Image 1 (tube, rainbow, N blue to C red):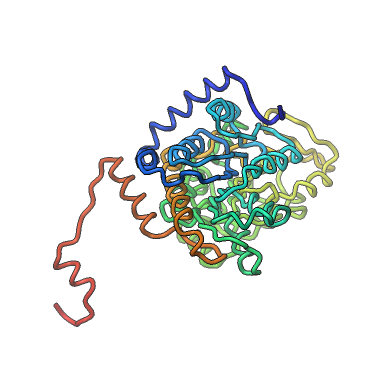
Image 2: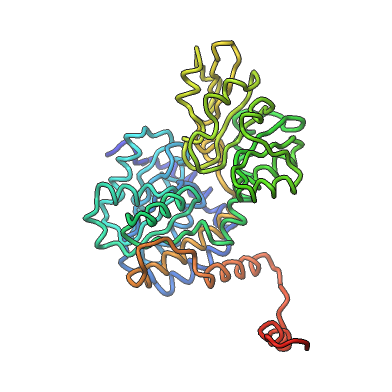
Length: 418
């Protein structure tokens, strides 16, 4: 038995209880699961899912299985797996290849194991499955109808592949659904990132200068939550419109080289490489804390930090102390990986309810329409996005206004006057 397959009965039982807790907070996904159980839209479909192995993900997996899918699940990040969840899924017959803290070698072994089911549909959080299939297993592509991508970083990679003509099957950018990015990215990332930092450090945010690199939906959420705790926020952004928005939202905006001198805590959420690098580490304060909530651990140039250091100490779980040659100390959280998953539980189930509802319905859409689509990245169809929003409002007991016939006619008229 591979050492990344967890077969611990007591751990599995604990995981099942937590999965059930999350299920009760994911009413939209449960509505879709009930529909899938009746209609079996995924009967006979092999699905490989490379996602964060959390309680919320478990409920997505059970929804897909209810629809008839045969699933292999692997982790999309070496530190994001919740072992009790992996054990629970494995005990329920789901092919689950993941263990928290797996090595890079094990990570890719898990991916290799998962794709042995010969997928018809791939689900990704970071595009690693698609990258592996395109680079090493192109023989699988002929049977693949399409894929889904969950995160901003993955969508960036896939759009680059499509632009170069390298993408060999259609992909739905679940990340771009409004009921995903506006809520999951903003409220989910905002809350879970702060939760992870607090778990790892127990620092007080009030009065500290907090540098947020990136002002997309994730950066907006992180900045908002950090300010709500009393932090003084600096935003570092390269896109003029987003930088202007940050200014209008009341934040200071400046280049990283200037922010590096002022910050007490640095949080990267850009999806790019080397956002914090050598010249920034060289001017940081003593005891500055650095962490990442973007998908890959390349946003912080850890090799450069290591070269600048004379000593590296493991202070506590998820906190490494880098002692500079001038005796300043810089603290790196969660090895530069996703702090909100490595040091906390990830996004709350209430927001993942919408993200994974989009994911489940996008899988159904790919199964039905994939062969008719081009080899490119598509947005989630608006009817799926709108349906998820409607179901969420219903679950919250909220009614919205409806247009009268007169209003409908007015909005669709081009004539002047009444």
